[in-house]
Length: 254
Image (cartoon, rainbow, N blue to C red; front, side, top):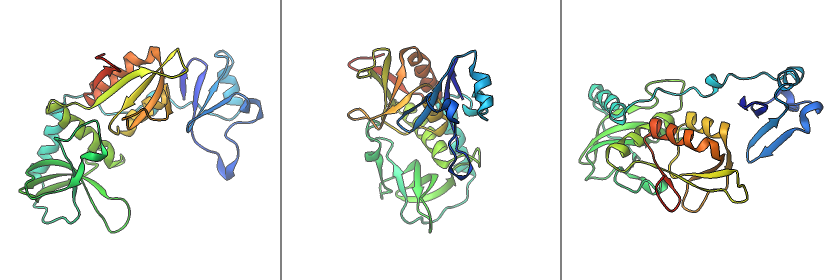
């Protein structure tokens, strides 16, 4: 995957544990965090990659994402699904993302459905085997009335992708949008540190990993990336358009 002219993100594995690149390229591989990248002469790179048996993955294919929409439209679609859903009945072990809890502490937003809860919530429900399932649930006084399992739009996607985007839309409509903070990257004058406080869908993660490098998370953040200064404006627009985030500069407002 081409990050910039002559710069490539390495993806995938070869059968039987064989090295992804041959000896002619192994010295050029840069490992940082869980990412591997190559920096080659931009003119010679295509021929060298072909000779090594590597194929360039089209950028648009890798960055496939849903269309940009208003937050209200995303929530309306999900609520219309609940309107059409049948009675769900009692669901044991149901946990919800508390919509009024701070968007700056994701883990603290999760709690069991309680007797005073009425409304529509991003939730998870247990299953006999495997991880809890993602869903969108309508509750009245703590009793589930309707439920839609996720994913609902794209059955090949992960349920968390739709859940996290739906919650981001709910937060934005409530006037408490999720946050992205930009600050200095220690020891990297040409780069910036980007902090997120909530998990983001995989299509957003792919964009982050194409332009940046995951680093140890900053204090209070859920995840942090180091990105080139020139990429910050585009990333800010992307997260504001796709996940309705509030972008701030560390110590002030961006």
